[in-house]
Image 1 (tube, helix red, strand yellow):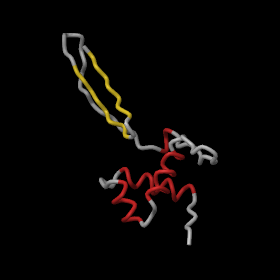
Image 2 (tube, helix red, strand yellow):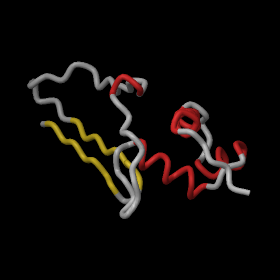
Image 3 (cartoon, one colour):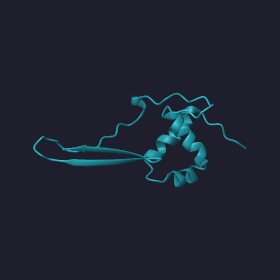
Image 4 (cartoon, one colour):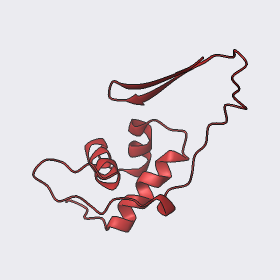
Length: 98
């Protein structure tokens, strides 16, 4: 039997994964949800709807706990940094300064 979850319940599950330190597979197993459902909910909540489906309302900035990466003070004094962020699904953000 299929469980129909409210938008609030889906958002709570997606948000719960962020602080869980578990992989998506492990988190979904613990919460007894399908990985495919979880990933669809996460995409929908982030504002990227599935083709041919109605998207859930996008998450506003105030609904998401802010995250911050402190790189310290960057100066023009010849310092150089390289930052690579693996965003998943083959997307890598590469920032270089200096």
